[in-house]
Length: 261
Image (cartoon, rainbow, N blue to C red; front, side, top):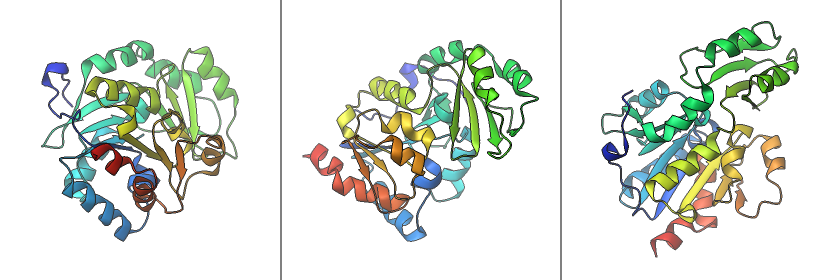
């Protein structure tokens, strides 16, 4: 990845009728192959009017491979690494972090990788994932053996812990997650909140689905996410799974046609 500043950000989103800000696993990549292809084709056929942001726990290497080799539409921007990466995506599929948006994230993290790993080393139920993340430490979690004192340890470090899908444990900078990072990116790009549809399926999507923007919890969403979103009138609870749920919400919430009018 190469770092860019505001002057080098070229993917103009301010005039798009709709911006889809979507999680990947289980959401944009979920559902049947036919439903995925219908949604992807619709996006590609309307790229002048539709912007695409991936908001994901996945890292830049995974995203680059996905869009270069797997037939998935290339996003304009990425909020990756559970909100700790905010990047533009070039025509070469390379992600370029936006320095001014990541500065606060880096400061909040304060090079905590080593401290986190040392503090959680002996905690049962956690298996360290790749240590190459810049501003996060992530673990696979075994819910049967997980020791919840890990939550207190992370809090004592001045950081945030996020559990999702009953199998992932992420340590993040304080007050940094998908939702706040997405809002900062939208403001940076001049995209009004009402022109954005956010989509997700697990608890690590809660911070963006609860922002008040038009939102969809796709049909295969984690029950804990659905429960947490009850009473949020801006959220469409889709029956369709994955990509089908996103397409369902575009029609149900009338985001595209209302914004394009």
